[in-house]
Length: 266
Image (cartoon, rainbow, N blue to C red):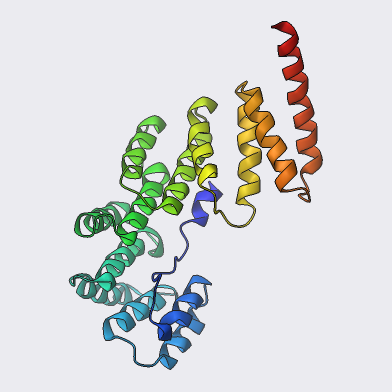
């Protein structure tokens, strides 16, 4: 379950921030709240609401946080979220995140209320769609019901229908596929989500390499030999210096042998 936790970290809360605030959010995105606080103090001519939002985000990222601090931070977010601008949407998103991941004891039910409100008030906005991705992670892993993994995934697919931004669709598709693997669902049910996520592309780090191997391996296990060959060959072409090259070559040889047997039997 480690993979899905990666997506629960602090996300930059501004995409087109004021120039004076750029350093603040960059430091927060890099898990450097002390540097973010310094940058906020040095920022000039900053809108008061944007400054209050940044300060709340910094406060959330600087543990330990006492019970009184939680209440103070949430009062600020509630006040900001009462507006009707992007700061308001970001504040409501951050309020949901506070209850989902920042508190020692998460309140997933309350976080869901805020994510749903965000989607209701600003449907189709970046923050509403990002909130639905985070809600999807909660629904896949963090709540006890529904117990049936297929029911969990069906509920999250309903959230996916409301997400139009391709990188966000990709992230949730990836998590749906990985949830299927985690819950040991048949490979045939898992593969379409992983393949759809990989097709969107744009993933960072080693995730693209891991995903191409994973799709190839699951395809092989599912008897989809041509598809397995395609992804193993892609891996060798696109990631020729990867340390798993030899293992993939060996697996590809098994695929080719299986295809030869299949061709001879037909």
